[in-house]
Amino acid sequence: MTGGLHIVLTWHDWIDLFAHYLVLSLMSVGGAIATTGEMHRYLVEQHGWLTQQQFTDAIAIAQAAPGPNVLFVALIGWTVGLNAGSYLAAVLGVVVTMVGIMLPSSIIVLLATGWGHRNRELRAVRAFKQGMAPLVIGMLISTGIVLGSANRDPANDWPLYTVSVVAALILWRTRIHLLWLLGAGALVGALGLL
Amino acid sequence: MSLPPALASAADSATHPLPRSRRDLFVAFTLLALQGFGGVLPIVQREMVERRRWMTQDEFVEEWAVAQTMPGPNVVNLSIVIGNRYFGLSGALAALAGMLLVPSLVVLALATVYSRFSDNARVAGALRGMGAVTAGMIAATGIKVAATLNRHPLPLPVTATLAGLAIVALAVLRLPMPGVLAVLGGLGCVLTWYRLKP
Image (cartoon, rainbow over the protein chains, first blue to last red):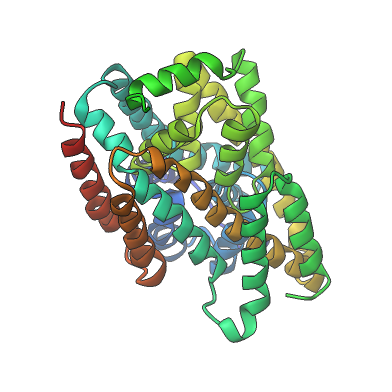
């Protein structure tokens, strides 16, 4: 994660970074990962606060690590801070980016659920919650398919596809603990079979 | 015999267990976030619905619809909705903190370690294997919650068609999510609205 980038961040830059993440939060319908294009434009192209490699590494590591995918934002903030020269700045980077990306969307969600709960007997509220169900289910299955076929290269990736399908069948049909499945996947991969 | 959905879910919540405290929420969400490699959603469904039984499968789908259509990370939104449901604002904050606090420390620690092993073929292979399992787990979660369509106000052929169209649009045609959400989600809501006519 150390690309040899040395930058200087003024207080004005920190405030600018915070404001940018507040705006990204409002645009993040479909998840923070949906705003990575804009994040890349701002951090890598416009300001040069991160290298290209640091940006892609942050996303890959957060995907592989436990926890919600949004933690790639924490990692980006951390790396920007390290580039600015200290662990203190790195901690500040995490706080600024994470509070920025979470605050506006969380307030909206809280207000919306509060309103929805008070009006839960309204026909429109019930129609919304139940009417979205088919799409929600289609979206889940699609996310699995899209993640599982990221390279779109069946000739080389068929062992990966097999692992995905077997994992899906086992999870669907049994109550086995998820960590056993992940461990088995990691083992098969570490043995060089994928 | 079938109860109207509102009554059915009231009857369910009378019988299923509830989180006892905010600490309960914090611990539950910390543990489930730490099990989610590449995606926490399958774990949320497994823990909340199947293991702790704090919510029914139908409630899960309904809250997920809200979490998905709002800005913000979906699973984090879901934790806010669930926390808020049981303990209001402080519950939402407890669940949110559980989801983010310890996991972010773990991610930062892993990033520090990973920078030394990123060229190792075994480590890269293990990550690929875990990624493939995660993809399968997310798809399986969708297949599992599809069972709730049996109790949906709309007939099964209609809901199954909507779900199928969503899969074609997102996984085959790779259309952008907001448009698909607006068109197919909107269609589902309008049809359901007519069906719920008092």
